[in-house]
Image 1 (tube, rainbow, N blue to C red):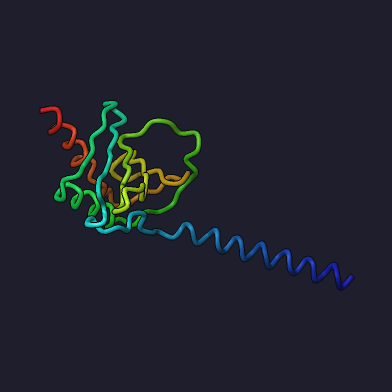
Image 2: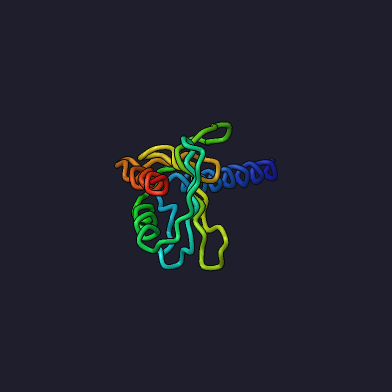
Length: 138
């Protein structure tokens, strides 16, 4: 009987530990935490137009990265099975490796690593991203 009790206590303890660790993933956090000087390029695909653009200009990289760096995102529901998006960003670091890939759905919602993340203040500057495509078509 004592052995069974110990096993139950250990099981409940492990469940509480894992539940607590999982719950911490829902604390609002910064998804992008890179300096714009460490970014070599940003590839942006517009899901509405079906076009892509590569950003290498320092001013444009600075604007995009600083905008995303300052936003704390709240993790939401899983995004598995959802199709379509506004923009897909691939951010490349100094080693020309993909640092982060995120999907921007709207001014306040992204998809990252299988989950939706939201910004309650709608600070994602999708108008700036949209204008990058307007400039390339002129």
